[in-house]
Image (tube, rainbow, N blue to C red):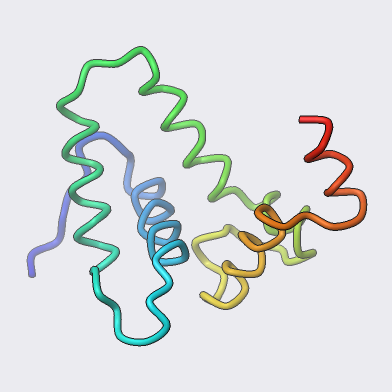
Length: 109
């Protein structure tokens, strides 16, 4: 497979998108969907669509793949996309099912 050149995202944010997709697709076994192919489809679609929300999408991916999201939610330092899959899933689990102070913050939102 040839190296894909992102059209909407820059290369670093594209790798973040791949990691996010890989983390969110939990098949409990063999991968049913290749996260890299899914990310290519998302990137291609976003490069073609006209929407005032495009910059917000780019910022959301960048925020999730930041170094501070894992640090804040699981006390792990490093970009989300660079964490092992199990660590990324723990970060997502804390977002979905917040506890303690994070539960209070989520309730206020």
